[in-house]
Amino acid sequence: MARTRALILVLIINLFSTKIFCEESHSHDQDFSDEENKALYTSPVVSGFAYLAESFDDNERFKTVWIQSQAKKESADEDIAKYDGVWSLEESLRNQQDGDLGLVLKSKARHAAISALLNKPFKFDDKPLIVQYEVNFQEGQECGGAYLKLLTQDPAHADLKKFHDKTPYTIMFGPDKCGNDHKLHFIFRHKNPVNGTIEEKHCKKPKERLEEYFKDKIPHLYTLVIRPDNSFIIKVDNKIVNEGSLLDDFTPPVNPPLEIEDPNDTRPEDWDDREKIPDPTAVKPEDWDEDAPVQIVDEDDVIPEGWLEDEKPTIPNPDAVKPEDWDVEMDGEWEPPEIPNPKCEGVAGCGPYKQKMKKNPRYKGKWLAPLIDNPNYKGKWKPRLIHNPDYFNDDHPFRMSPIEEHTGDGDGPRRRKANKE
Image (cartoon, rainbow, N blue to C red; front, side):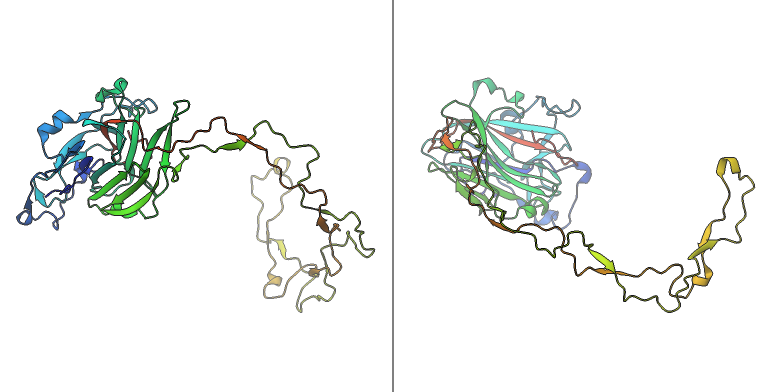
């Protein structure tokens, strides 16, 4: 069986790699290409109903069901704005089953998106949503994503050829990486029940390390389960890597705070927030000398034996010759360059001797009165709390906007970070 073996899902997708395969970097590993040992691939059979089940092993179905975006990205430069990444159904580079195909993004550093309608819209009511798909970064991953977007049911965006990065979606899920930043996205768009505005909610980061999934060059199965009780689970290869609640584990949180600081409140002029103050009754001691230097000359320091005080450390070079083109009016009086005094070699030193400095035992610095508790201390001032005019309480964030389409987003390997659609 293929990678989607025996799965009963709301959504099943099988991807080899949404972005890394490149023909010029094709690698025929002998360990994986032994034709005699390959098993014969058969299409997986999904038992029960699935809103979308896709193994990408039928070219005719692929051409009929999956629609490539032909839109342009508004925020990108003209030369890369178009969604012109090339998709293809191919065997993986390290395939062990004849005929086992997957969806491959062939293009480097290009925007690419491909979409398909669900068998029927998914409505968030009393059944969990299960999204599961397989990704294989066949040559590792430097910078790019292989995530899915579950598009919001919206007649204004029904033409999948016009899909772009601003097309409304309900859920975004999947792996993404650039440099040392490894992510497993789970984002849902929440509708404010009071004013109808839409805001993205980003899931907390997984506790598990994700680096290996992007560089080991083997397939990994990504699973998202969202339940009507607002709980969620994220798995990689059937191992839980993240879990929690739609209410408690997203940023910004679904529900705003009941109270907020009053933006019109101001701190009173007589508010004293100093915990400690100088003691007003303290007096500087009479023997406190604020002018005493930090260091003084060490009178016990004596000139080292052999020190030549009458010799200069450097002398004019006796062998130097004034250049022929030296112009006194332009260059000034010529003086030979200085060289180390040969008489100072092997001795303790030459020239006037200066005694070393030492710490001044009488130094105390500027006198400051000791600190005491402030009798007028009122604490750190904060604006008073008022009722949040934008407050609402949504106990059922699971009831998201219905999903009508599924979109796979990707872009080829590139050196710099860019948007994924």
